[in-house]
Amino acid sequence: MTRPTPLTALVLAAETIELDAEPEEGEAAERASALDALSDAEKRAEKARSDAEKAAVAAQALTVKLDKVRSSITLQEDESSLVDLMAEIRAVEKELEIKKRRLAREKTKAENAAREAEAIGTKDPESPIDQGS
Image (cartoon, rainbow, N blue to C red):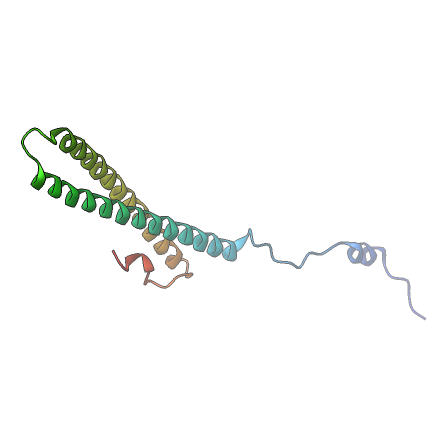
């Protein structure tokens, strides 16, 4: 006949053992975090690049407009419109500089995230950030 199961074996058998890996722990979590940071940084860099391009286009359009106004101005007739246009151009150029600085900051952040991801083996050294700069 069989002997009764020892009490220790019954207690161990009654414990719940979790076999699921938790994504918040270990190397997998580190890789996931690095890839998330890289993805976010690349999105921010792309948005900054797009904003800077739009500001550059606006500045160029205003410069063309200024040239047209300058060529058609009589001495006092449209002087106030020229002053207004010059103020608008200065504002757009200032905005363009801000967008360029933001682009540089976001690009640097994305490059750092790519290097970090590469360092832990989750990303190839070639990054889409470097394309189209």
